[in-house]
Amino acid sequence: MKKKPREYYIIDGYNVINSWPELMKLRGDLSEARDRLIHMLIEYGAYEKYNMTVVFDALFTEDEEHIEVINPHFDVVYTGRGETADSYIERRAYDYVRRGSEVHVVTSDGAEQSMVLGAGAYRHPSREFYRIIKRAKKELQKGYLDKVKLPVSRNEIGNNLDAATMAKLDALRKKK
Image (cartoon, rainbow, N blue to C red; front, side):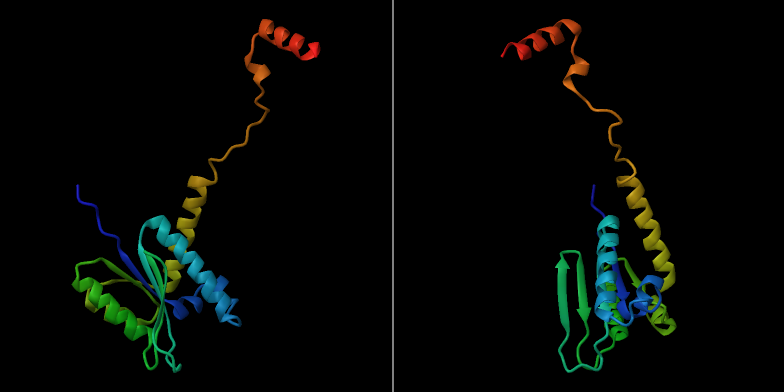
């Protein structure tokens, strides 16, 4: 049986930061907001087995494009001089779709959504994607954390021995 290839998610980082309530509170510290977003997306991508790319604008910088590969299925892109996140996302979505991959783009930018739909990708508004991530987090917690049950009582060897064996062991213990 042929293994289904991983789907690609391309996320407009600053668009998401400006849409998700817990990240909007961190807009004064964009570094912290980016780190939180990346952490949430890494967890979601690993849980759902997606390839994830989050793209941050660096339009007004003099730097070149910079890509941080976090793991084989997750990378962070900082666009280079003169390139918007939108143009990078459009190009990458088009390339992946042309190769036959299933591509999802997360942005609330209407023009961007139209472009990626035209390229053959799926689009997810940022707020809708927030709800998807929260639902997956609940499933993850329920599936893995709710099943952990601590024993109500101690599990001692004496609870599993008959009276004669317990008497012999007690005699040995007192013999010293």
